Image 1 (cartoon, rainbow, N blue to C red):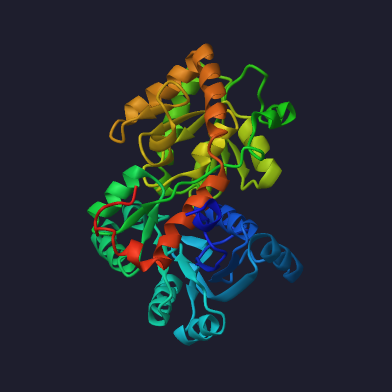
Image 2 (cartoon, rainbow, N blue to C red; image 1 turned 180 degrees about the vertical axis):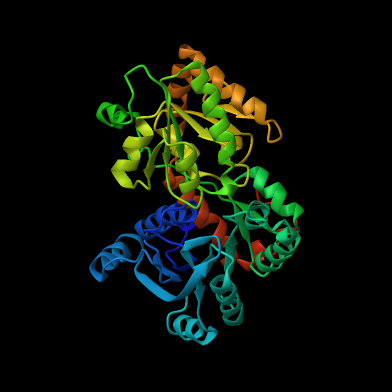
Length: 405
C-alpha cells in the first residue's frame, strides 16, 4: 500500500456534544482543536450542540462555524444541575433522522453522554452510521462531591450502557483505559490531547500583571486554573498554599476560573487573587506569569490545564493520574504524588517553593517536553482510530475488552 492510500479519506464527520466553544471547559477546549484540525485536513465537520446562554451574536457564530466546522446545528437545551452555565441537549429523533438522511455522515462522534448523546447514538445505529464515543468526564466520580454518592453505582451502569452502544470508546490516558475497561466498557481506543505551544509560552510572562497581583520579581505566584468546584479538590490547594505562605509570606495564590465555590473562597480568603475566567492571550499571560502550578484534582479524565501549564514553563504539582500520569516525570519536569497521599502533594509543593534551582530546572524541562505534544498528531490519531470503524473486516477483528493501546 502506498503512502497516499494509507491516509484517511476526507469524510463527513458529525461531532455531537452538550458543550462546545466559546464555552470554557476541558471538553469544549478539546473539541475546538479536534474540529479545527479535522477541517484543516479536508474533512467536512458538522457540530450538533445545544443552544447555550453564552451564545454570541449571529455574526460571531458564523465566524466560529467557519473556523471550526462547516455546519453548526443547534438544538434546545435545559440547565445542567450543578453546572447552570451549561445546558442539556434535547432534540427529537426525527430531527436528527431527517438531518442525517439528507446529508449522511461517514462517522458520528459523541463527546458527551447526556440526552442529546443518547439520541445521536440511537439515530446513528438506526441509519447504520459508524458511531464512536469519548470518555471525557468522570460523572460517576463527581456524584460524591455533590452529596449524591448513592448515585455513583447507577451512573457507572448508565455509562457502561451508553458507551457499549457505540462501536468504540476513546479515552485520553492509559490509566483511564484500565479504569474504563474495568467498568465493562469496550472496545477502547487511546486518544490523547495536545497543547498549543504557540499560545502557551513562557515568553508571555507579564511583570505588570504580577505587580497587579502584589508581587515583586522574586516573589512566588502559586497558580490554579480551572473550575472552582467541589470535585476539583480545592481545599487541598488552599491547605497547600497556606503551608507555602508560612515559609514565604509574600507568596500570592492566584485563582483563574469561576464556579460555585468562588463566593465561599473569596469570603474566607479575601487576600487571594481571584481573576475570573480568562481566555486567549489573557489566559496565556496569566499562566506565564505564575511560578508554581497546583493541580489537586482526583476526578479529571485528563486535565488540559496540566499541559498548558507545562507549555507555559510552570512547575506542576499533581497526583499520579490523568495528564500528569502520562506526561510528568517526578522531579524532572514536574512533581507527582500518589492518589492516596495528600501530604506528599503538599511536601512536593513546599520543596519547589524552597529549592530555587530545582524549580528553575523543572520549569525549563516542562516547556521542552510540552513542545512534543502537538495537536496535529492527536488529530491524526483520531482519524486513524475512527477510520477502522469504516473497515468492518479490521474493526471486528478487535477482541472485546482489550484496549486498543
